[in-house]
Image (cartoon, rainbow, N blue to C red; front, side, top):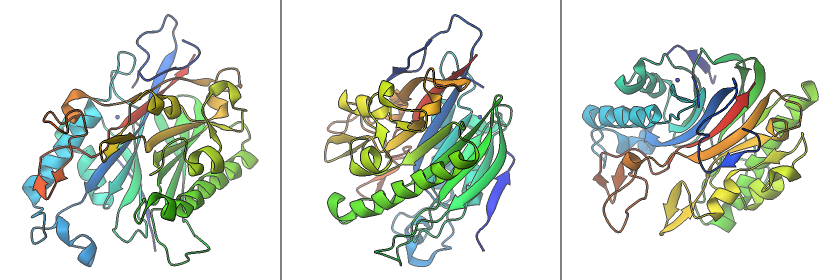
Amino acid sequence: MKKLFLSATIALAAAMPVFGKAPASTADSSTVYGVAFYNLENLFDTINANGKFDLEFSPLGARKWNSEKYNLKLNNLANAIAGMVSPLTPGGPAVIGIAEVENESVVADLVAAKPIAGRGLKYVHHDSPDARGIDVALLYDPGLFEVTGVEAHRLFVESNPTFLTRDQLCVSGVLGIDTISVIVNHWPSRLGGQEQSEYLRVAAAELSKSIADSIRKVSPLRPIIIMGDLNDDPQNTSCAMTLGARKEAYDVPPTGFYNPWWNILESGKGTLTYRGKWNLFDQIIVGGMLLPDNGATLTLVGAEICDLDFLKQTQAPYTGMPHRTYAGGRFLNGYSDHFPTQIFLKRK
């Protein structure tokens, strides 16, 4: 039986959104909250608990994955999370969705890592049926976000009934004084080709939309956030058509979705590269209730890619790209092959 874990163990950043960077200042007494997402790129422990699927992440595997490398990886990721601050969010994000974690144990080790141990992070983790054994989870600052409900949703693809992937984790809670729901995702990969695998991500988008619709039937005014490594860009079918996440904020009704990353990608920035081209898979899509004049107390005021200098490679031809853990079978002592992303919500 699959389990959900809430376990102990990140205070924060005037009105149309300024996207591409964090808000630098505010002239009123508003509170600003950061909401972030980070694909941690194969955060595995050293124990081969999943046969051939995680053999490479063990001392006997091809990567010679051992306690020293694991602890370096944990410390690096914790430093990346510690760096997700701004003048208005000096304590870091209120919530951080994460992907590519092997189990509950590695999440517990991450929040206990020295660079962020003092923040008293808590987390929600869920075991998924993914063949590789990777899951999604949510980290949160209990002083800013109080969990009130957790649900995990299984993706079933009718045309491919044996397909297994990450479950979608919906965490509801009170952010400041406002109840919101955050759906954490890691949609199916492009393995086999983008077009050939697109139906899987369309199915994942349908599931996310269905979860949101179910929430709105009970709480029509509930702000909803869909975040994750979607393995698609904002203009792809799964995001733009199936989910209906629009490019411009003025075009979004309260029950619709706005995608602030569309314009950021078109400006030439992304969160990962493939064959030298930037993609922006790591998206945080907001429900229309979080836009100005739609009635919610919280309002979206910014979005940024957290492409901190120390997260980037410095050697040509990969200068400026994410400094990953491995490349070409060689241990690089890096962070992730994805940059984190973050949005900022203001509450008066």
